[in-house]
Length: 211
Image (cartoon, rainbow, N blue to C red; front, side, top):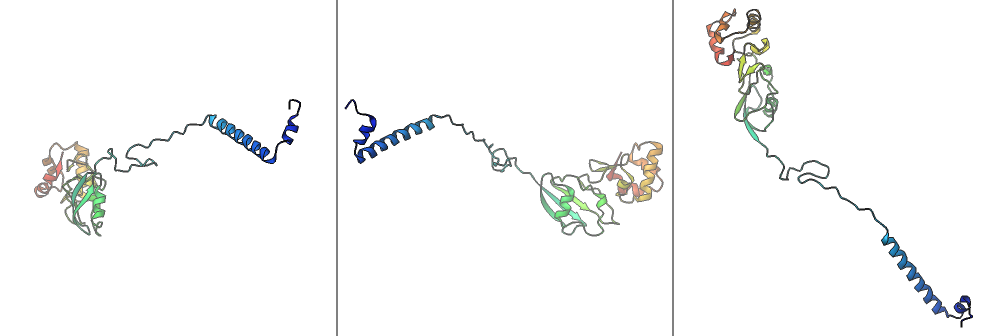
């Protein structure tokens, strides 16, 4: 009736009607709350892109199209090493790597005659000399002070010159002293002006030196 209060109306309802009313109210409030939560702005998640050919940590996998091909060089390691033979290396390897691949130098090897840091070239030979043998400069330019595989007598040190056959410590120092006092050599034949160098020694080193 129009004059009844809300409390009087509720008291007139049965228990089932009250529970139904509570359920409807709960559903209405729940739906309103869900709509409100969904209407709130949410941050956008942006995933970092990983370049093709690289792992997530940034290291290259080597399987992508940008990976560079690996060049292989074959080198003959000979002379005073434990296991001489032809070995395969990746481009960029050095003379020291070739010697280690051949089992390392044997006792008495004259490693001072080699430039251990020289890069390996395909189809060349690394010849490791033995103390007391004639130490020939290898094709990889392994003698310091050399140019194009030849020892430049105007720039080589006394130690470099000692690697030449027939040139010992004394004669090597005489060559250095001669060019210091008289200027650079203008020809290989001028080495005959150095005391201790005769025709036989000159012929043994003629193809190994330059000016």
